[in-house]
Image (cartoon, rainbow, N blue to C red; front, top):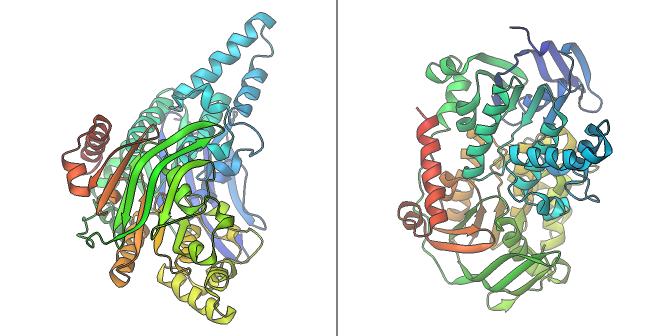
Length: 508
């Protein structure tokens, strides 16, 4: 079978350091080729080479060949390719109009509408045209990702490079995305899947390349690789993909943060209603639900990042100002937020270390030298070296930036730490290490309260309590074991059952 895209002996270096080293890749029509490995292993650089895109200042050697036809790209951070000043559907309509311009005028309008509707259906955007009237900042990370996927599908690409396409997706949508990419491949389109989610890779991939430090350390048919991995790094990745062990956690202490009669809006439309939610000192609360269910909106209200809401967020009995700008330095330090899209949370022109250390200076009044030393120690505990964190954000991978964002929040010594999908862009080894670190933080600081915004029920199982959101409503909350084993609400039942089916189907 002739390849629709091929990479031979690719080498990409920046400042003398090889970030991709002698990589070979052959992409076949109708097949899913997956690249797996740790953050910074070279997966995205390899995938982007098929589009002719390379990091700034890179020196490139080797050969990249793509057959006639467009290459679509679904990035890990979809907000980076959506214009913040244009509504989410603007490009979809533009592309559809361009495709229909040769049709008779009377047929154009219906053709445009049909093509956009078809793309939305393929991308699992049930909200349809109502969602496309929103601006990107009014969409969840999962919704942004599906809009970008719809754009790639509408363009009719013969090769689709999907960089972490299930990042930030709930298990129900993840299953549909697996089904959709399988259907795309079934129509003869080649899919290059860059992913940390080994459950998704198991479900989709025909061929797998395992990368480490810019090199392919193992490759072959997916079935053989799962059954008999040959390289030690492959075996380590697979071992760490097994289900996480639930943590007994700390008991629930006195209330530190309360939500009372909260109604949050986007552009006048109510997107979240929560009568009462209480966070106890030292507990870990997981907030789960579908993309667009209001999880991130709830988190942003707690942190003062979403002002358009009614009701109260109360810290130690005192209502917090709705706006971040109106909160005191102590209030800002007390409730810290780690964003899902870590890259957008950093200034691209300043070294990462300086931005992390700035938190201790600004919120705690630390001396700059002491703040820098503390930042280096915290970053090192997260696996980020001195040399790495002195670079600018653009020279770090998405997973590395996510850990740096966590370090920045920790330097505030928060009482409530809100983590919005912070493990969704990490490989299995780093993910487990990060979750162990969070568990260790709560062990060392019994007063630290964690809020985990997550689509992953394995991660939710680590929490003391779970709150389930569906369509902007808090439909169920309670102790973790109780909610996951004997759910009461129909949506929670569907969530747990789908997760169990997907796990059973993809894990040996």
